[in-house]
Image (cartoon, rainbow, N blue to C red; front, side, top):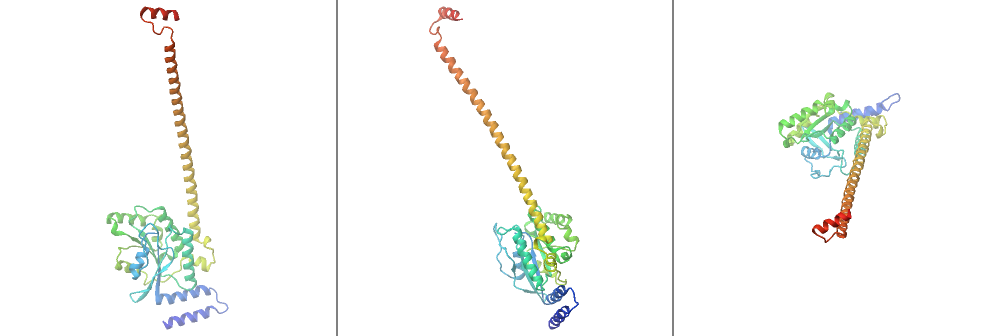
Length: 327
């Protein structure tokens, strides 16, 4: 440990000497070397309800609150206490998911970006990122696809070698069905194929501490890497809205606005059509009522005429003779 600290101090002073460039990246690299020797920091990400907090609690022995109802519980970054795994100290970072019940997607991205950029600026890099996805989902929902697209832009292609795509809830699905879904996930670019092709691992979690620790062990021999959003905000001094993740979220939100607009137009057209149908039904009913009214009036008039007929009360030949005179 002393050697590592000395190495960091010497590198820090050397990089501050005149003529040196890239001193910020050098400090990040040296601090990362220290972090790699002393312990690992792993972020756990994924959609709301994918089991992030449960995974963190199981692996670390923590007791953070887990959402069991319709409302999400993790609306802020939660850092679990470090725990030992194969003589290394591991710190798991529980993150809020998009489609949160309390915060907007923009607020969630701001929370993630702020934490990640502060950690990177302080010289602490992530040793890996675990992205959880429910294999129990019948299909990849729009929310899940949107979350993953933002996640990809947040990490960037270079950091994908430090990403584990982990499917959860295997115990609640028939194995053959789950394996078919897994194959579909890794086989389509709209799902996980892009990430896997760039080095991300596809793993399963069976809800045991052994399974969780096996997933984490996959990061023990790797080297920490910065995420794209960390480089863009800290090194390139970009605004969050201009980062790849920010631009992706902006695109997603514009699509949602367009979809809502289209849905509104369809609802308006349906309402107008319903009004027209009701007006037509009302018109037809009014005409039918009017026709019945006319028929009723005519019937009454016939009855009155019958009562007032001059031959009324005469019978037989006398009535016939009367009616002939009235012709």
